[in-house]
Amino acid sequence: MSWMNLSREGDVWLMTLCHGDNRFNNESMAAWNEALDTIEATEGNAALVITADDPKFFSNGIDIEPILATHGFPYFLNDFAPRLEALFLRVARFPMPVAFALNGHTYAGGAIMASAGDIRFMRADRGRFCFPEVNIKVPFTPLMTEVVRLLPNSAGAWEMMSTGVAWGGEEAVAKGVIEHALSAEALLPTAMAWATEMAKKDRATYTLIKRRFRVALDVYLSK
Image (cartoon, rainbow, N blue to C red; front, side):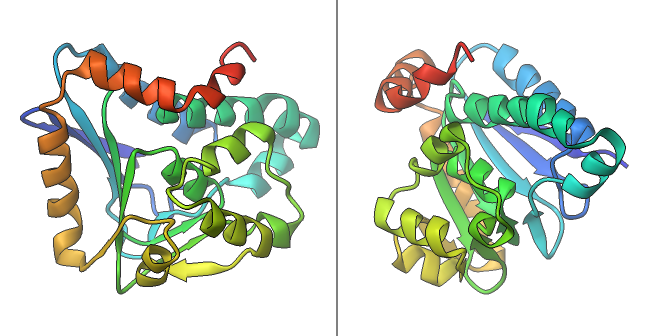
């Protein structure tokens, strides 16, 4: 079973996660980086939309129990977690417009990944957006905190981080942490339409503006 499908419509790349609840582990992170390598290596203006094909989940976060059972906590802390942070950082600084079309539950590491995008579209009728870390006693790392700060409303982001509340699409939009809540039928077409327009922007100029706006992330580039 593959981890994702990658396709292209004109200047818009579409990455579709296709592995159930799409948790992060060594295999899925390798697939993420391979797909991003392919997209980044292409020339010319472009944009990226990331979604999933499961009717219930976008991503349920880290596949932590098998990782700990197989490799132990020191490995998780010193090897796996830094590589996952590097993936979040890569998406947050990715050299083109990046939209997330959140088709279902987006929890923990999945929600941090969605925070790294430039814009988020979410189903209004199904799925929740949640940072449960405070409830499971897993503090955010400094880099993860900075990525979550990229959400459009810092007060809403803090409420989510500090309480572990899970919001549906309409409430997440009302709280300002998600930009658009849409029907299932409109979700992907709307995200693709946004990406089609944004792909008309000069890629080098957009990338420079984006990275300067997110300059707080630069401190993590050498770590």
